Image (cartoon, rainbow, N blue to C red; front, side, top):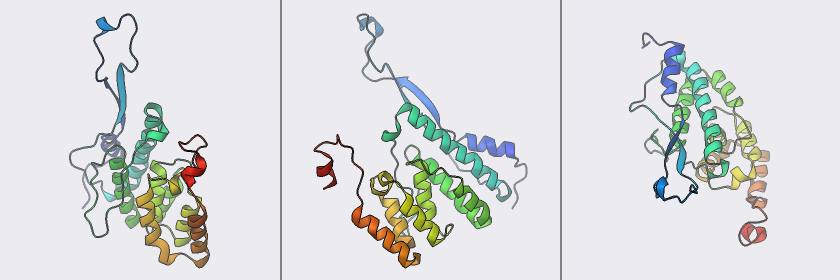
Amino acid sequence: THLEGWTPSLVRELVGLYRPRIEVDESFGVSHPLHWNGTAPDNVVRANVAYPRPHEALAIPDDQLRYAVTQFRENLELAIALELEITGESSLHLQTSRADDNGSELSEDGFGPTGLIISFQKLMGRLATLNVAAARTEVASWPTDDEHIFARLRIWASSTNLLSAAEAAEIFLSLPDTVFWGSLHERDLLYALRDRWPELSDEARAAVEHRLRTGCYPWREDVRGGRERAEA
């Protein structure tokens, strides 16, 4: 049923409850300033990105869903910017956002940005049911150079019928080696490959198989033990 009183302003207010923010706390083990002997220690404070969310998710009405998705995407873009600013891109950690087969749906209370991703996937799933064209337009707007949050979402989209088999194959083949071979998205990507494999064309299967046989993670030259040893 239509919920009375829902307006774009109220949608923005709701989405704002999920808006990531920087939190600053006192570092552990830092002595009192009187004991610094004239030199302040490094890391007097510690900053991290917090991901607030309401105790109970509110059901956004269908007629406001498309707008809610675009607003929620801004939260994801902000999360990327804040994580890069505070922790650096390489330290971003994600848990899986793919539920087990026949298992219960994943909680939106996932660690760090994972909960935000799961919330967004659920919104996208609803939008795809109501307006597949709008959902596909949204997927097309996602940046392809992000190797964390939007890479995970592109993998998620490739595992669903929101994209054709050919479009899913294009994602599998275009993912950077750091994403395709890295551990961050490994579980979700393997599920996506399995889900769409029966639908892929012979040509697409051959291309993916070639990548699986010949590719590897792009280790840096200064990796411990040497790049050749890491690749082995």
